[in-house]
Length: 417
Image (cartoon, rainbow, N blue to C red; front, side, top):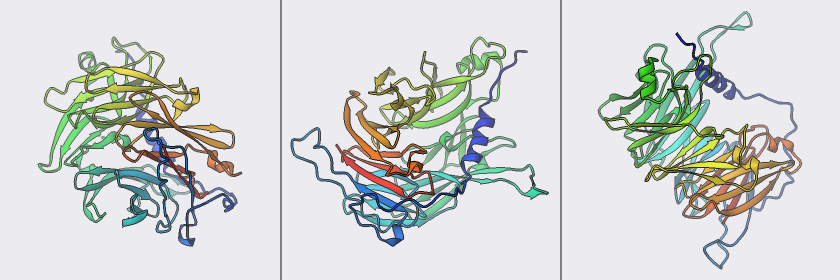
């Protein structure tokens, strides 16, 4: 029998545990001297706001009205920002806040559920928060015993962030079966179906009927079954596309025919969720798919950040064609963020003591805007890439710098293009 190397599961799970641990560093708190033109009271002292009033809109000769964020109602360190609709965003701090972009005020909030990691998706009747809790086990004589528990849950909220229900994915798993990460869970637009990838396969669960459906079974490693799924052995990331008729995925696959001792490699593609479960699994020369962002009409596949090529792969769901968009600088393709509707994407590039943020059009690849965000003398702002969110209809982007580092104040930068 041929030996096959598939090392994804261990790496992902150990990385998740490490990523959920906050290291307390002996750093002096960040300076308050950086420019801030918007009001912040003492309750939001961990969050620093820069209001950038920039270029005229590309579609108008008149300057666009700057968006102003009033974050005095946000308590604690701003950790993330999520899409809600064209008039709202969700801001994660010590609570989850619904923020109205029209009025510049928070309109609802809900308590922190205590997840180690989470993401938030807007669904038809509100929002769903998907989170993971990691129990590292107990300690005995200074040694951590076996028994690390990683559990995934989904909490549903109405449009006003009132909690409606809670679902635990453990109820769907067999013995020793594991969900690999938060990125291997995806909800349909209406929130009635959830897809999830495990060490055993890819599944669909219907909340109304409480029925589970197998989309792709990964338990069989027979050559015939491997060939049927184009060598695919692990789903790492998934997202609904094609108006919830298909799932886009980033995966690990093996060569067919099998090559002894050759490890698995990155692939990406789509699989239908209907009865035929038609699967397309692709590998691209000189390009490794690493991060997916799925929309109805297309899917973005960002590349391996350790091998930047200045390119972004776009897969069109209407005609099945793929194309590569080119960016200005090679290192830009390391970190790519998609917009709420998929019309634009953002890149971030570290430049010694500042971050360069660029906004591109997905259809044309055209550069729409560029901003330089300084570290203000605190290099901790340069430790991890900023979080960028783009609201298509408003042509507005919001950048969080330092959000991933609880030792510094989050800089919130607003831009319009």
